[in-house]
Image (cartoon, rainbow, N blue to C red; front, side, top):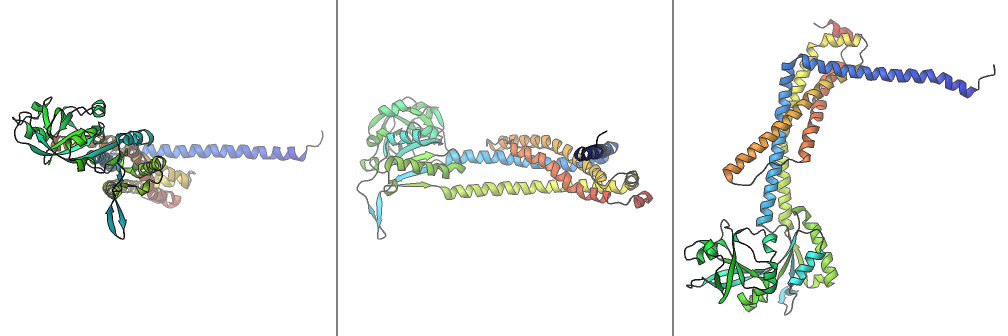
Length: 441
């Protein structure tokens, strides 16, 4: 035979070594799986102890899920209320009506007066907004349909989209339409207080479809706003083109504010930047004649309040989880003490430290995982029941919120609790000397 080349000879020598390594790895994996199986079978052998250890995790995770779900629901309710009753989501575009000269405000004779065309252009050209508003406020006199004493009222001349933009709830009838606003049809929407005061029988619905006189001119009542708690004085809404007819000339020709609404509180700064870009495109050096303002100070206060609220609730739930984790650690420490002899026999039979470590970590993760799954369902049930009780007692439309973040926290808590509180008992068991462990009584 010819001589075997050195390269082939080297490969022939390495082949058995690789096979042995692969076999060793397979054996290690089998041993590790066996250790995990021993740990799980131990849990099944002591159902009462396993249940008591799991109970702490169930209570902790249920508390966490219930608190976070209620917190999400209450935050959503608060945001809806703020959006409905405040202007924190609005970006205000105000004309400059005065110049500051040597610290003295000198009124301008001419200033920008926004029109419906400007509002329509903003609605089309500014991306990522929830709506555009334009209104003029003033005072007027209103006479009931059956005659009688004239009443003073606040009048708001606005766009047909005001009901949606300002989330005006209509109790009877409707808000005026875009066609009515465009053609300046003589229509009016009354506040609840105005409808009660102007009706002979103090029944708001009685005025629907009838004509009241606004500054001497008849206008048909097409809608009545829902009652607002704490509402004072009479208020009416008319199309913006009717401003010169229902207000004093000075009020009708006064400055108008163009409003752009952001989809959420967090998007107010981004919408402000888009509005400024749009103004630069439409008006050039817009900052000379206009001001863009927001309620960012109030927005920041709200965001800080929401963050503090969530951190507070999370801290309370974390205490419950900590108690559950301590319960797992105590049970596993007691298990290590009771099974010291068993551990010694396993180590004498060839089990490594890693095998013993995996055995006890498997027990810990199994306890926390099953407790987390049960606690998740229990917590959601508690959250929905508590939200229903809040709605029944306070009439507030609060619903429990189920978000992916809540699910992720519940799932990750199982792994964190199991590994964190199961590591010390597992390391303690793995460090036992086989001889001392076998001698243990």
